Length: 141
Length: 167
Image (cartoon, rainbow over all chains, first blue to last red; front, side, top):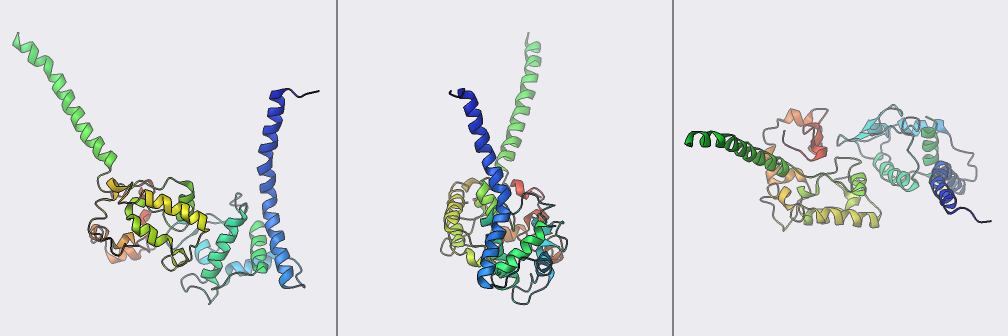
């Protein structure tokens, strides 16, 4: 038995269309899992990420970075569900997943901003534990 | 016999005058005077150059400026704006192609007057023409909490994102 050509074309379309959605849904979890693997490699006693620690990381001030951006909240604002603002006046969409549902689906983009912003705020790159804590805090917000 | 002829010509003369007037006005609007700089349309450039600040129009700087800027993104006016080299190359290509002395010449020509090529400027806000056009803006306006930096074009030029800097 052979499939009707238009039916097989339709099935093909459905298969292709459902791929990105499935890939997107797993992206955040995959990235968290990758951070967990790296955190465990750095410290065998690693016992999972903590949104509470992520919240502290997001809101506390650091002395090692640039004086005009001592905290994540300097640009992102103190409310994760609210918009932030860059020093050059550009609005930053909220970091909380509930307020910006399309966030954290591109691992390279997440890494790009961790690299830049950790350097600006902390004066160093963030450790996998810090990235995972912070991300799990924002995913739950 | 003469009278009706001259009367019948009147609407045509008026029509021609109106057409000429609108041509002049439309022509000026299209060229945008010297205050129109077509905004970035490439989605990659828009995303990468427009996250922290307005994605500045490529016609606002000469090609040599963009090239000089794009090789030092690690220290981008004091910020780390480093990019994947392949992405950076694509962006450089777009900026250079549309630079104020290349594809965007008819827009950037006036703004780039007095710019010498020996040391290409990195800051749009240091171009002689830019400085002249903003000389009347008082200090307190620059320090206003809605402005804060000269790079924040949209604080005063409400249509800057669309490429219009007339006000």
